[in-house]
Image (tube, rainbow, N blue to C red):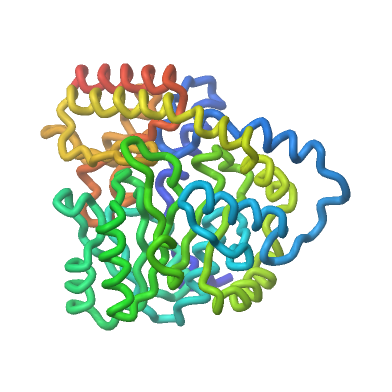
Length: 385
């Protein structure tokens, strides 16, 4: 039967590589996974204990999520940022992915233009296109720490039709770069002055190395903030996240969530309450020492091997760099690295369709032992020429 034009969505290359890596593992190969942001440690013990203790049938919850989880998330904002956030502005979602779908549908009509920085998370661009929205590319550079700026936003608006929204990720995937509080505030103010709706991806908050990541909510309530338990709490497969929305958006988002998803998975919501407990928070925080060691090992390896333009990894667990001169394009490079040396990495084309043929992203979210092994294999490939 004929397919819709919107079904012609570009692939998520990192997930294709994960699938190929899984196929090789099924054949008996040992693969070092540096292709996806998959923490090695799994959900906190307190999350498992909370689910094990759950009573009842774990049926539908309200479309906004369990009240106890929404309250626990509000308490997180008080602890982490000193913000008194009303729990009724929090919407529990089936991972951050569902949050982006709900945010884009609630904020933008079909045909709207939404700006985002390249390099950036590919699903932003692909979800926008599937929903009939246009992604407006902002070409970020090392000079702007691969982040959008008020000047870049203004230039994009001048070159295009009116821009209705901006997606901001800080810390960013794939670069790990982060905006400090004054820079973030200036960008928020620029959006407000231009009538641009801001969607702030804060999924890597908690995973920073030199300073905490400021939240957009410290500067304004007129922002949609999206977060998830996937990264800091290492709960990727549980598919549980949340969004914070302005008060006027709560009911529209609730209506959308009810019809599109009914609710986030009830068992994952119970587990998330456990993850936010004192014990769950302590376990999640304990992984930062390993991520820090991985970061140092990964960046040192890339520098030694001649990779250039390595993005300052302020947060998250990715190293994004340009390939050394003389190496093939990033797709061929990653294919050889996986097939011959058993290391899965993601070509930059996933994050920057125009400039990514010379860049690659390595995730260092696995254990230090596996990152050490991956770096050793990468060095062997580069030595082999």
